[in-house]
View 1 (cartoon, one colour):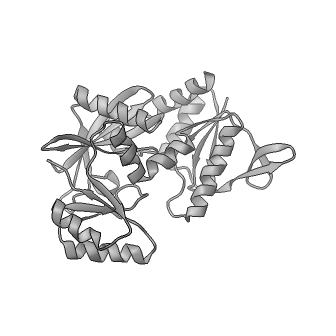
View 2: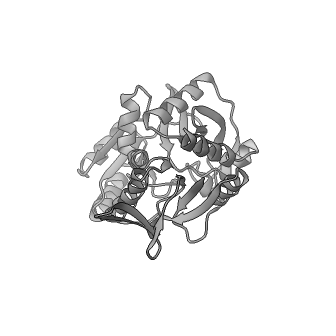
View 3: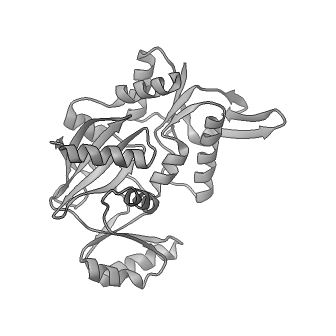
Length: 295
């Protein structure tokens, strides 16, 4: 069984290396693929995948760990389309390219979660920068964030309507829409719940450091093992299912009105999870892809 771990770093990042080790341990032929070097070809012979310079690629499955941080819309769609072409040849990918695209669009993901009865923060997407100050006045505190982003980079908390307008105008000058979300948090922490298949394998609290409101481990957030209730488990599983994800890192917030789902990450890093829980989810994810291929 040949299974790929897919990312775009020239050197496999730690999570990819962990997965490669686990796949080899399970007797698989494990390989690392850079998504930028994957090409798709349509010819009279049908559809084929080429990796590198002319080498045709055939894998039984793959674990997508990254699509690249900086890219144009066209490059994003090229990478999604080549991954979908891999699927069309009979390979099983987790998470699926369609699910990644759907969940990576933070506004669309919020729509889907809300439509499935999950509590989410009030969220607005607009190109009308004059609407932003009114929203901040109404909500009090809000977060302007990239439509597609990771690790909290680019997200800015505002409570001043004039500052919010200036940020929105700057984003618009780069041709970017403005997504703004009501700030809803009772404590300076959130809960990252890790779901693999139909199982919650653990959860951590992520605490914001003194210098920022962000809880992301990549930005200095501290972690500890979380006490999870049946409600948290249910929300995490429902969010993962709503977005058709095979595994996910679901971010849940505690508010005065109850729990809210911030987002479900399709390619979650697990440095903080491993630190807080004392084990890595890599083995569980490796077993999941093997089981799905066997089915």
